[in-house]
Length: 174
Image 1 (cartoon, rainbow, N blue to C red):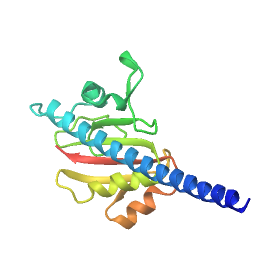
Image 2 (image 1 turned 180 degrees about the horizontal axis):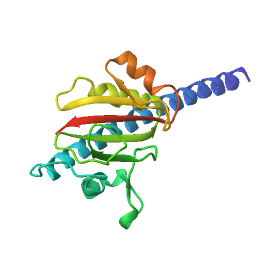
Image 3 (image 1 turned 180 degrees about the vertical axis):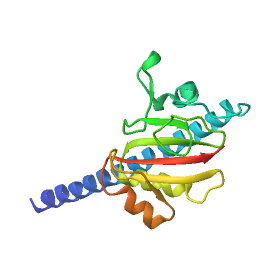
Image 4 (image 1 turned 120 degrees about the vertical axis):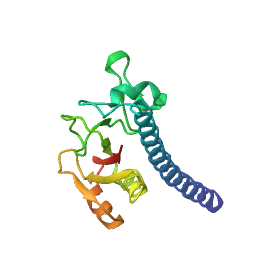
């Protein structure tokens, strides 16, 4: 009887350990996938507008949907969206103010990821800090909070918060 109880206890500990390991690996894979989506979007935007005099007014993410991986697309036809692994939208536009595309810009464009967990916000934002070709990294803990420029790891951690609805924006130099 003691052997059975001991066996069940060992199996329970192993199962719990495997579930925790799976959760950590899954979060890491999703964060890496988000970064891959940003890299792909940046390259597609740079290619699409390489010979243009400026980035146009209005959203520019619609022009790169066909170049994104299939796991980054939700919907069909004209209603397709570029999405994060958590289902939040990825958008892009001209200028230096994330989320707005009211003026054309000959120098900057931005890419925004909405509705990501804080740890993914942190991972993405810190990977773009002080990178050539990046003017600013901005983050907020919710979709309604004000954008905040982040310049170091501590400010990224503070701005991404602790929730599951953070957002992060990268403002690139053209």
